[in-house]
Length: 427
Image 1 (cartoon, one colour):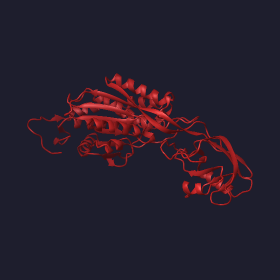
Image 2 (tube, one colour; image 1 turned 180 degrees about the horizontal axis):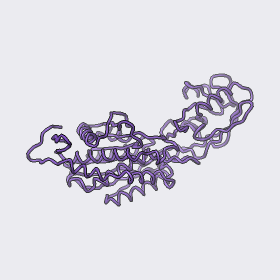
Image 3 (cartoon, one colour; image 1 turned 90 degrees about the vertical axis):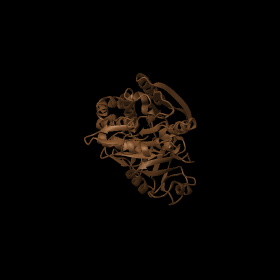
Image 4 (spheres, helix red, strand yellow; image 1 turned 120 degrees about the horizontal axis):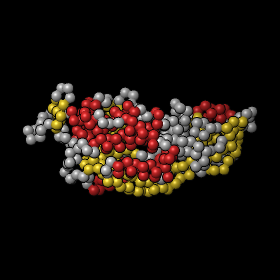
């Protein structure tokens, strides 16, 4: 990056960029978020019918923008699925109570699949005979240590906090199943169960309906502009998969990551007719992020094998900007990060270095210049991740940032801003 322009490359004024930024539509992105978070797509879990329906819907949106669309399937093994609400009832010696699925109780990823109700007395792990009992695992005891105390036990009851909306959030990436049913219990109910574990006659009856499925995932690619091997190539990415609905519990996945998909789709729409012919623009809507960013790993390795090194901009979580957008850079991303910083200054969006644990890391690990951008989300992996909690001003700010970054990266010289300063960007 230098601070002078050469006589053979006349500057481009930023007024053209400002006119382009004015065409970014928060309303259009809100409509995209609402559609992807709808019941028809059922939370968009990898390998599910809802995920496939979302992919087809997005493919049509890309085709409508004139993109050449391709789908690339790949296998994913052992995706966890809670296939029925766990039915859990307990008795403290006096009163019998039910636990509410998603709030007071859920199924741990390390649980064995136990669809039938198992009843046993309550006991505290490490205190007394575990045989034939549900063991309440004290806070601070590891699952490994709990297994060591569980010879002959019916199952394990682990404490787990809830979010600000009172939900236990859902995860798909985690440990392999073990030998026992394992339930996660919210902190208040867990304390009551632990107290009941010392009472004669206390019992619990419950099941753990969770299975592992081998599925086919699929990335969706859209190539909007052809380019030579010597030209600038930009790849915009966002994962479209979510953690999926539970039986009886909608998990819309609005902020995570319908919001990021909406930002990328809007940026592609705005940039399609605004880039020089020498600049390539592609998009990857990625599957299987929630099970370990497998879609981006698959794509990044393929790009590296082909010798392609696009500038990768990944958006994950454009739900609610509070102070600044988080940016994580990886790979040889110094030039890309410099352009991103200039774009942020021009659009007035504060940036802060912070973790964006998403698909950008897979591209960076493959040696590609990659940045991840996130702006927060509400209702993470829970029924509370609804479209009304995705702030249109936030999606608009991030889409403007992405548009400005790509526009500036595509032009080696710019002049503009109130100061009229000159900056040359080498990509």
